[in-house]
Length: 179
Image 1 (cartoon, rainbow, N blue to C red):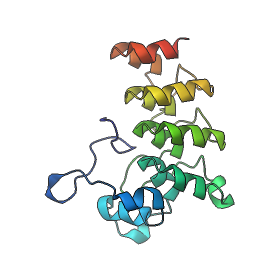
Image 2: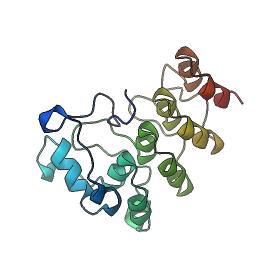
Image 3: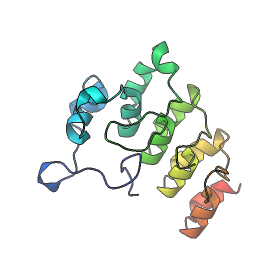
Image 4: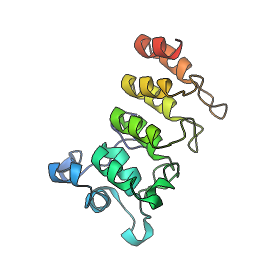
């Protein structure tokens, strides 16, 4: 998957005119209308069928101020490890896995400090470290490893972060994984 692609894999949905949708600057830190903007851009289901994914949405776009604001509320603190189903049919994943996929190191670090479970797997058996490695996000891989992520990934997935980094020639990431 390309860097910054959807958290469940595949190409990002295109906006009108074939251009990738860009988050308006006013929404990147405001957070209030982020959920609705994402749904307008990417959701092919009626909004009433979409659950509250603000925590996951903020992790996807790297909106650290919104993550901080949401995680002050107990209702969101209890959902930090929730594998939310994105309204557009992407894979169920945790905010940590989403932030690691997108390469948002500060969000990965913050979620870990707030209690995100480091080695939870998605429906494909992939950990946050595995998707960070697959997407070439060295900073996220370092943060996850320093926090205690298993460099061997999950026994529920046929590949490991170490194997993938070696296979694609990412010596920088491989060095971190085998320290």
